[in-house]
Length: 187
Image (cartoon, rainbow, N blue to C red; front, top):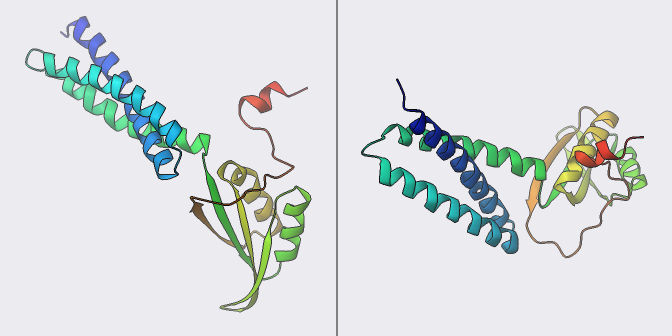
């Protein structure tokens, strides 16, 4: 029914497109964040893969139009994979603003005990006085900060903003290990 050579070529094209589009997605995100070195290296690999794959498809499209389908699905899948990989890597820094009517001092104290700097502002909300906690942190630290603060005040309101340039960022003393580091350090 199908030529195994066409299927093998199609699978290779599909996987290669996942790689180069994922790299392109990550490259775009790190470019916006101002990380030009990483973007430069990713661009070299991305375009090398793309030129090879696009050339293969273009040269064989008349005889093997099915390769276009593999190419298109690889592209679409690569976008999703790139976004997921970038979220796992969690490059960059963010501003976390927490607004809470009652638990501001408790949350600030908890985060400071773990070494995370917090600035507290007092303000007026819709229903009365509130505390706004201003936290500049690495994106990967949100994985432990958000669950911790939501345990203290499950009804808090928070906003996460991207911080492109910062004069200084303090890293928390406490930062739970994740991924392979958590597995390799178990005793």
